[in-house]
Amino acid sequence: MSHSLIEQFKEAGQGQVFKFWDKLSPTEQAALLEEAAEIDLAEIDSLFQSLVQGSHDAHQDFSGLAPAPYVAHPAHGGDQALWVDARKRGEEALSNGKVAAFVVAGGQGTRLGYDKPKGLFPVTPIHQKSLFQVFAEKILAAEKTYSTTIPWFIMTSNVNHQDTADFLESNGFFGLKSDQVHCFRQGRMPAIDLNGKILLSSKHSIAMSPDGHGGSLRALVRSGATQIMEENGIDVLSYFQVDNPLVKVIDPAFIGFHLQSGAGMSSKMIPKAYPEEKVGVFCKQGEKNLVIEYSDLPEDLMHETDENGQLKFLAGSIAIHTLSKDFINQMGGSDSSSPSLPFHRADKKIPTVDDAGHPVKPESPNGVKFEMFVFDALPFSEKTIVIETQRSTDFSPVKNAEGLDSPKTCKEDQMKEFVSWLSAAGETVAVDANGVPLQPIEVSALFGYDEASFSKSWNALTDKPDLSQTLDLT
Ligand code: UTP
Image (cartoon, rainbow, N blue to C red; front, side, top):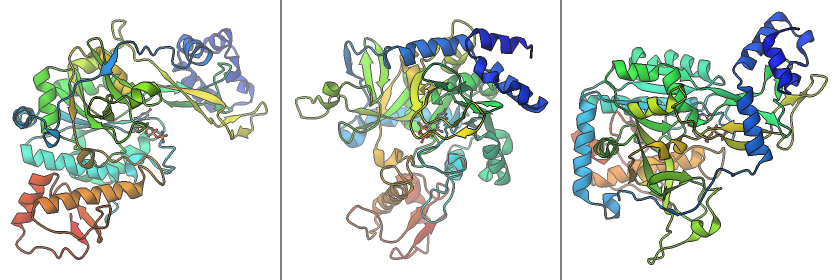
């Protein structure tokens, strides 16, 4: 076995990757070499030294940390006129075809434990529509409202790319045109054990996993997505996560605030429900905005309150952003002037093989994965704006199979939003103590996607449905 790549791995102390080489078929050998070629050995060594051998959060510096300023929502005392202006600006951009939607869907969704890509997960209360269908309908509704085409970029990973692409195609892209939907793969990183050795997932494959949602910036550039933006005159991407069907996929006010401020990257926040809530927090350090992960925010800052008793570090990040094309190119380029996002360490149970090549399913974490986080790009944006949104209209993720942020809570939150639209339209719906309707309700974005559009469609119905029964407006 004399292959220069194998020699390089040996020299770097990673020869174990090829320990079954002589027992592999030519096809298996080729597959292993292909994976190995993706790995930057120097990068892995440096991550091992800094994140595994060194202190876990050595890169965190909390000096001079202050809460990030944000634009308050009108429902919380924000200036209505500002929002009207921003909305107009966003609507103009939408009508001029300057906006595309972008969902990051490359994650492994291990907590949910669903055996298909998360975007295929049945999420709506009555029809069990998939997350992808919910987003597609929101895009279709926005296209209709602004008489425009809104391209949709979907970031997948090697783990789920083919299943995602097949699903969208076999469902006719849920009414979108096939050439406006662009699926592309994100990069991957190998997992290492606690001694810095790259782990195998089988005799002929390396334990590779997606490089985190922060990998989206370079994947957008590498995949040619930014080129497509350029060719189609797209200036802004509306970024969201695949697990959150409540998200306003297209939010004209948010897009407007972003454009007015000339930002490279902007974000939405919601007030944290309680100090320990597991969301990152928007902070300011010097002139830069940044997000500090909940697990990294020092206890005293987490609980600090202002003179009104309100949490000082209140602004929770819900992974909804806008990204300008130029900023993506700046961050995602491959030349040396492009800043690189830091990697974070996650200790995981990584299925691997023993010395005899037999599969091992560890009971406790046996290795480390490396991921980039998209919010780490914020400090690189010269200008940025954070706006407040409401949890009830923008955020109810499906993370866990049960309990908090589960399919059950998400269905309830969808129905609570539909109830609020019905109330705004002057209707009364019977609900339980938590505000969940006693009979199931489902409203497609094609009928109504917010209070105003819902009211319009509702008022146009000549024969109003009976609200004491299941309500299906699809
Ligand atoms: P999560 O942090 O919830 O991770 O991703 P996950 O992989 O989906 O789920 P768990 O932690 O294994 O249970 C938040 C969002 O970022 C995307 C996910 O698809 C989701 O939309 N993501 C995450 C990527 O696109 N790529 C990644 O490498 C990681």
